Amino acid sequence: MALLQLRGLNKHFGGLHVTNQVNLSFETGEIHCLIGPNGAGKSTLFRLILGEYAPGSGEIFFAGENITALKSFARIARGLSVKFQVPGVFKGLSVRQNLEIALQRTRHGAELDQEIDRLLAFLGLEAEQKQTAGNLSHGQKQWLEIGMATSLKPRMLLLDEPTAGMSPEETFQTGEMVKRLNAGGMTVLAIEHDMAFVRQVAQRVTVLHLGQVFAQGSIDDIVADERVAAIYLGQAHHHA
Ligand code: ADP
Ligand code: MG
Ligand code: MG
Image (tube, rainbow, N blue to C red; front, side):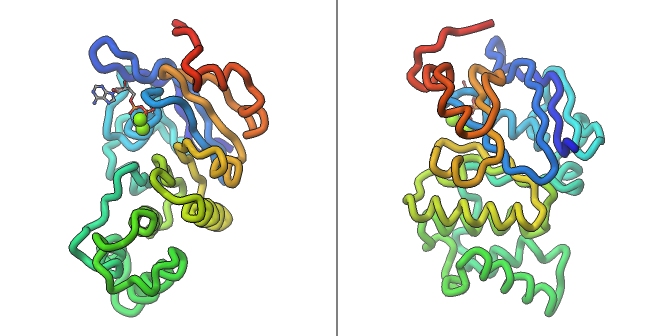
């Protein structure tokens, strides 16, 4: 069953059609990677899904419900969560306090402490829990933000370039983290550029190009597709 469906989604800024008739379905339980050259419209698609932008036309369905007119907070309440590209942690607060902020509205007392401990172990940040978040490594900051984005156990997690700036080792650990979240029942949609990460986690891959769905398939299908290789080399022609 499709958990998230985008139907004929259009978004333009002035004359620039950033997403152009995008139809996409994301299945319950899958890990799906969204790839495509810089400027393809990937982050804009995330902002449309979260409700930070209103589409010019088209509809968004989540768990069978038309959420196109809902505000972001209402979408989050229904189980959508996004981690954007730039880490949004509170730099002056400790790792533990950051997780506390993410959880404090839904957990209290001993239950809150236990849940923070569980998250710290999951993120591999137990030793850093008293450190200020601003002093974490880049990779650790990204993990803390994944922890904050998943603390309320969303049905679907959107990740915008989660491994940008990470070492290969950190990238691999992030992939394992994403797979464990998925094994726990979370549907994941990740924008990625690192093909090793895509191969590690993705069950399906969609290529976005010039605001349109250009190709879709397994990672093997995608890397074998010469049309996809061509757009990364900048050789593809603009198509209407
Ligand atoms: P990607 O994430 O695939 O790199 P984006 O969705 O960030 O692509 O951007 C796609 C295109 O839309 C780019 O040309 C970008 O400059 C443009 N764009 C994105 N947001 C805005 C905005 N708020 N106003 C005007 N143009 C925008
Ligand atoms: Mg970009
Ligand atoms: Mg982007």
